[in-house]
Length: 167
Image 1: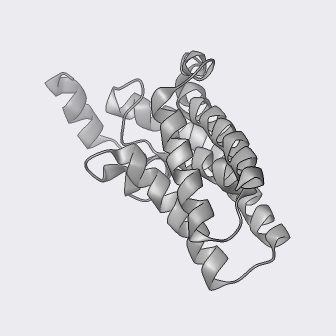
Image 2: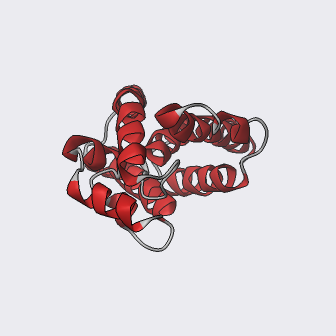
């Protein structure tokens, strides 16, 4: 990245967009900011699941609200942050991992084993990017940043659901 872009990015950051895009700073973790975003999402799920002891229905509703919120605000936040940083898909933008991870957790019981399985499966599909996940990256701006991980979350949810039936 050129020095001019770095200087401009440092001068002007849209605070709300950077806060959401980095999921309140989780995306600034090193190494592997995407993993930090996924872990943060899983920890929030676990805090609610283990702390509040919601019914399965209430846990699902909370996840659906979180997913919708992370997508609705994540797409414009990712678009703005990518533009201001001068990067097409900055690694520190992890709101996409948050949305995908919460999708992967939708079929999970409130146990650490289910949470860990969803985390591992989501990261696997997010890194591997099987067809057509990589094609979704070509969508413009935040759409491409977010929706490849949404589909990785769907893949992880499907595999986790099948595994839950067998084990």
